[in-house]
Length: 240
Ligand SMILES: Cc1cc2nc3c(=O)[nH]c(=O)nc-3n(C[C@H](O)[C@H](O)[C@H](O)COP(=O)(O)O)c2cc1C
Image 1 (tube, protein in one colour):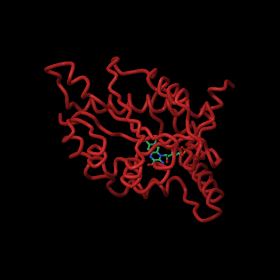
Image 2 (cartoon, helix red, strand yellow):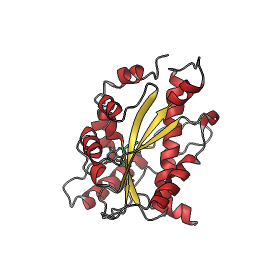
Image 3 (cartoon, protein in one colour):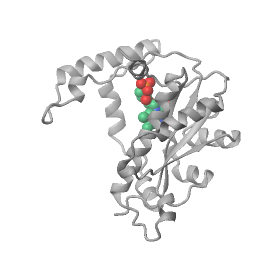
Image 4 (tube, helix red, strand yellow):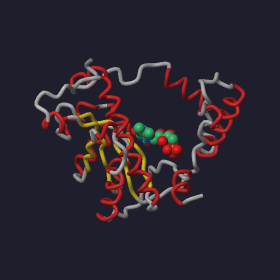
């Protein structure tokens, strides 16, 4: 076991924070770690917007579906796929390809995860805020994001004021396939469903005990964010 492995295996999202701020040195270290992430074709298509303005924080908390920790955490960062820089550098940059959307999403997630892991290794906690994609256009307007800059998610960071249990993940035998794709082992899934149900029952003192499969059914039997295709196209992503 290394301390890095210990940090990774101890991950759980934190949604309640103390009022302690993050020092500028520590924040700088966290962002340096994000900057060090691998980059597809060294294209470096990521921008991070640090939100210090409390009014903007409050608006973003609301736009993310009234998630109060966006306003109360010590630092809130918005992670964006960014090809605007490239558009300024290359006169005839060919943008709008679906492949660039994938690269943007992958590279941005790598930068953000480096930041979160670095923060967690320093005793901080955090939670990603995909809820920003509930209202991508107002978020984009509020942060003055130019064409070819896509707000993907936020990250709340701060000193934890709660200590939730680690949430059980799918067993490796369902996640990892050897040499070719394996069919779903329903017996293993049933065990996992029971584990997740017990985790929720304990965490909510019996108020909620959904299985993982039940949650997935709830999520995937309706369309989520139906405006996304239009927003992507409007921002200059996934047009071809
Ligand atoms: C891209 C992304 C977006 C997320 N968005 C939200 C969010 O808007 N609000 C929230 O409370 N949690 C959000 N989460 C946190 C997940 O709910 C959480 O990671 C998941 O339930 C697993 O729990 P854990 O992180 O505690 O292990 C997000 C996670 C990811 C990776």
